[in-house]
Length: 119
Image (cartoon, rainbow, N blue to C red; front, side, top):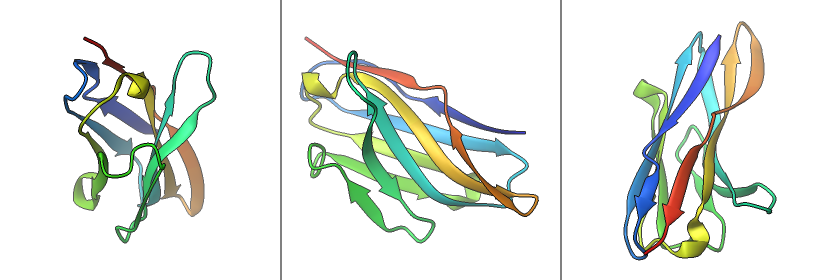
């Protein structure tokens, strides 16, 4: 059994910062891509940022220069540092990962963590 558990969400004022974490646990051989998505009320889930096992990153245009994705392969953990937060960043943030185990690759989602940006 593999689980992705997010943490670090909360309420923050505009201009503030938060750091999200997502830890993978269970029977894991390797993890390739790890990504953060978000879904605001009434909107579709969108990709925020992604990082490969080698450290290559990509970002949505709306967060470039403000958010930074990183990972600790030894801890099977991905992070999202969010700075200069705006009210439009308010959403449930989900972690996603491609995980190999038992000779197969599977895609997993976390349960989500709420981020609210409001004064």
